[in-house]
Length: 301
Ligand SMILES: Nc1ncnc2c1ncn2[C@@H]1O[C@H](COP(=O)(O)OP(=O)(O)O)[C@@H](O)[C@H]1O
Image 1 (cartoon, rainbow, N blue to C red):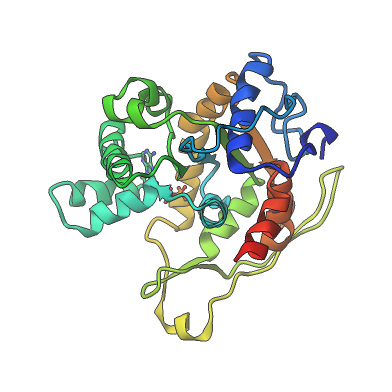
Image 2: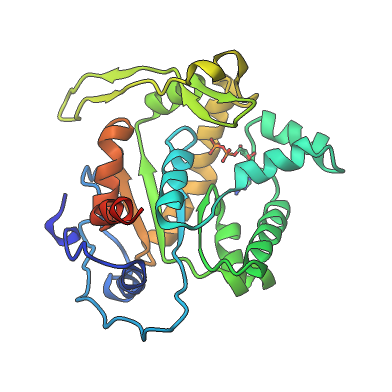
């Protein structure tokens, strides 16, 4: 972990926000971080001194963060944990697509074909589903979110500035790019199980990769369901080996450029997952300067 990321972890969310915003101006246009960098945060991150606190009664805008990463990397898991910690909604476009599918609306049979082939649904449809969701949140006074699975194409990334609705409600502060090697991603997708009653996400894969050729080993214990979910577990229809391989191929073709898009704007935080949740979660909080935040929240509860 680079020492420059280890600053001022006493921050309130609003000062964090201000600092993440200031990052974009402090970081040179072309970042130096890449997939070979095994640190948990880009080496070029330079956090500015803490800004002055906002005036006491000013309404604070909440975080607007995005999780980017290959299928199976754990976007949903970490986005949902951060959303609980920070008190902002977790919006997964994969869930919006699955809700649309389940609604048996006019698009559902076309959508199910696309999703079961591992392909992306059209930018127009995804932007429309997300716009509706964000507009509903805004009408309820929500000013922040953690997005998971959007944007996945350059056109979607650009829509944040050009779409009438998205442009009005989104101004991303930070894009967290989770990374894991491809053979693990495949195993994790194949091991994924969902409880069709409570919606809980579990994983029966037990990953134990030995260190070799300078790459660290990685251990990820299974995330097993409680006994009352055992008989209700289902597998996602797009979590078959052939479809996961296609989703990975499409990620490399369509979404890798989105990583570059945000890297060049100084908003990309690359996080190489060091292991399972117990090992990765505290390190992720640390990379986000949130390590004290969790303790403070539990103390206040
Ligand atoms: N932003 C998006 N653009 C296009 N299609 C999407 C988007 N988000 C989700 N989808 C569709 O929903 C499917 C499931 O998405 P998701 O649950 O995020 O899975 P994963 O990240 O594991 O591939 C995708 O394979 C794709 O068909």
